[in-house]
Length: 102
Image (tube, rainbow, N blue to C red; front, side, top):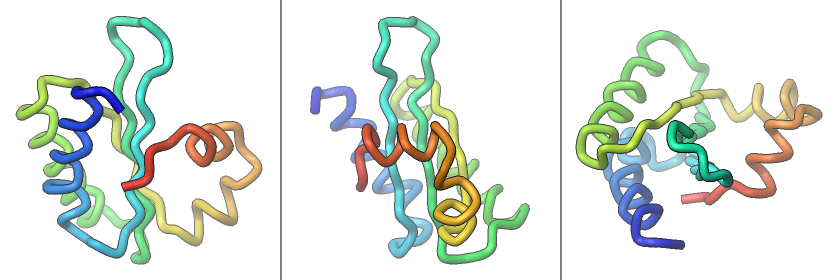
């Protein structure tokens, strides 16, 4: 893990994972050299995902973006939906295989 990914990881732990220590938080760093590729954060919550919960995570994501200067995409799913509905999708495979679990 390089310095940038370490710094982002710490900020995500503080701001995003701090909202719910029981949620799984997975980071997916860009593999290419594209200048405009976002870091992706996947939050797998034990709760049902609703507007209120998603807003809390978006507010935390904005804090991480401001402090790091990095562009970040955020995806919030309930663990049940993630493991049942998305398990056969390419993004599920990519996140499971290449993601950094915090």
